[in-house]
Length: 164
Image (cartoon, rainbow, N blue to C red; front, side):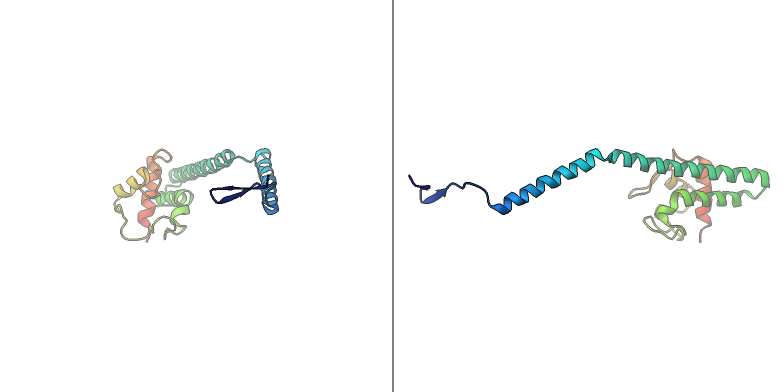
């Protein structure tokens, strides 16, 4: 019997082995896969640990913002400075800690919009700005209601209204 069979005009020839290039590529793929899995499984890498580190960094930054604000409020009571000036100074510290990453150090905008303009998208009244800070806004503005107290929100409002 011959090695070739004819079924409905289709010739069938059974191969003894696959082409050499396929065997080489398959072997390289298997070796790479084993090395890749070994590295990530046994190196201690974890996306959960990276997420925890990022959360801790954000929490530390917020805690620093709270401490810097508290220091400014204490200075107001000791130094007898003007209340609005103290609120603006405290608001600037909070802005640098919480807002500058998105709105830029000089509030001219980066990821977030420019805060030095005469009009804001959601209004530039004290209440509108306070609501934006407390409740956040769609498309990226986070809510800070549970993270900073009303006096800190008021200091941010004063600072934002002082920008030109």
